[in-house]
Length: 285
Image 1: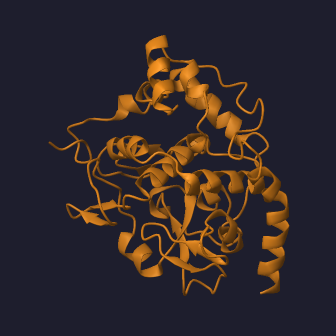
Image 2: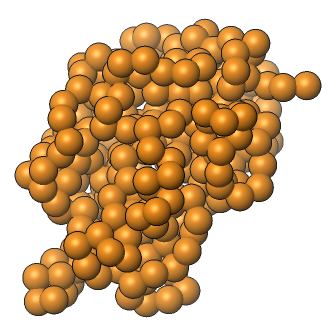
């Protein structure tokens, strides 16, 4: 109890000033000043920006840090669980109330089951979510799909898992983060059922990113994790970098819509070219 309270007080003291200004979720000035390329170069530069100065946190740290990153804004002392958005007590009780879900399953990335000291993608809070233990077990290591799935979380077509309308965009951005920040691990997002060191379904993830743009919870989560680890998930920051590499017509369209993560921008980052709309997770008519 004392360790939990001390940790939360320390992080809250550091995070709160960042979360209480007029542009509370904006990136630090010049954070992405070196990101100017397109295509594969753009993705590499984004990865480098998110890696520079990164203070890696461990899998064990998430037992306490989830109290801040996944806090229920309406119920002090509670967190919101992935997939179900159930509000439960934040304090860690050895996984009885909630446990740590890897949105990119451990079995589909390099390395074995994590210990509390594990860092990297298996311990990164951007790649973890608190979840109901039975829901976590049920989801197992299934890929996500389909692009046009709606409603509550659960399985679709037997082998694909739908994270639910509230989390489909959040989960997609977590996976884009991992694919970019930890590209050196050899992990990648693919269409259809993933193999070793892969995760999917990419077509569905791209669709969900647009259908469920970052909301208050998602953006606040990103900023809190940044305050802890000094690296953000670019894919949660709504900023104008995404439009600067686009043709004028696309810039104008993005500006009018108030959304800076356009399909054209992600296409230049290399993901759109890896999707196949005829894939199991693609659009279904």
